[in-house]
Image 1 (cartoon, one colour):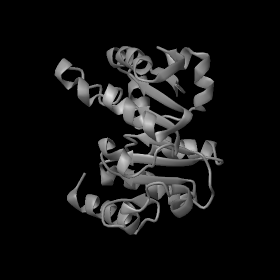
Image 2 (image 1 turned 180 degrees about the vertical axis):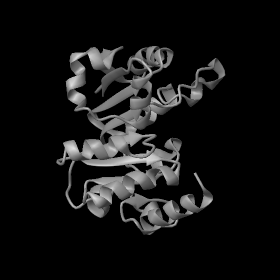
Image 3 (image 1 turned 120 degrees about the horizontal axis):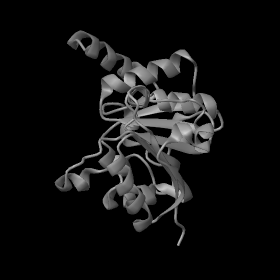
Image 4 (image 1 turned 90 degrees about the vertical axis):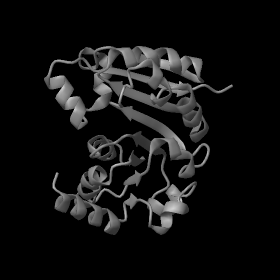
Length: 221
């Protein structure tokens, strides 16, 4: 991507009401106030981590107008795509937050989120990278604090070792596995996904990779 196009997208983000980023007043005040200060309707909040260009966030917002969706990514040029699509399609139940995932607790209050989606994250395959995996114990503890009681966590990945790791890590860290599959598109679970795909999902599927999916629920103690 050219530097000029990146600058154009950064300017779009600066002007877009549906993008929360450093430099905007809401960047430091939105925690605990998404349904008051960002969305016109008080509805369950669903967050996609590592949303990229926002295909999944926007797709889910279309499918579930009675929920509010927030895509999180550190790359401003990526979220500009989803932000502009949502604005063009007049989707008021969509917003984007530009931050690193490790800082989520600076932007969400305990129990503010109803569902989390982790879609095709970097699997961090080396043993020494384990602490960076988005289903590592540290991250799962943070998600648990931010989710409502009995809130849901979804994971989609093409990486089987990372998926197997997550199947062990989630139950060990406060989540109950509700359902899972190693081949989403040949599973009855696929009906729940309404044909919505991320860029990477479409790319991996076209190359013949199976899509792994699980849904889990925060364990209430």
